[in-house]
Image (cartoon, rainbow, N blue to C red; front, side, top):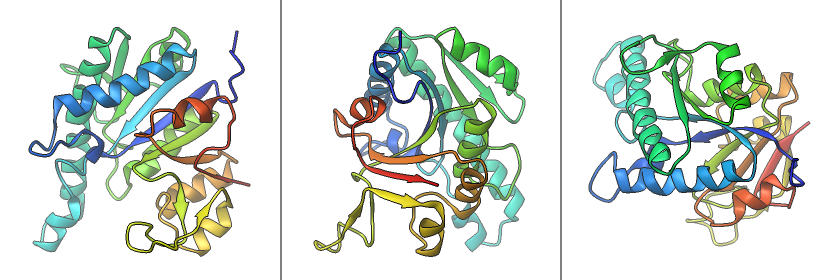
Length: 238
């Protein structure tokens, strides 16, 4: 029974900042808030996988500006995503939903290694799967990791969770006349240099016809409405 769902398996891309509080870069209360939203979707019968960034804990750009080697800075970011993944795992489990964390960089004491078929099996059994460690390679962002994992698990859509209700032609916080797009093609998104996801991630989605939905995760109804096909946020597609 699909309960009228438009998307039955989703890859949710979260920023690291989604777990940051006013005083703590990794706030358990914020993790609880995000977990509650994921559990609401899970209760609808949606299979949920998550990729989370690390911007709340580490930004490679800061290291690069101080002369750090790019690969080293990127590996530090990958490790930080695992910390975020474990925090979110704990919050979701406390809400009563089974979770598995899989990492692209093996660390057996804290998480499973990423194995595609095992990840799909977890989803089929009703578990939330959180992918940590990015792609496991430097020079690739967690946006690209989200696009890659979404295709590997045959997700119906990548949902980019933000704090605004879609993609605008300029920053709506600075420009009160900014216009929100309801639909965009991949090419339009790339040509306009709209900050949906990085160009590598968008190109991967375009080549494999994987839609990207950008919405405000903190709107209490937006995610639920999007999953049943209501017009929410901005859809980037072919």
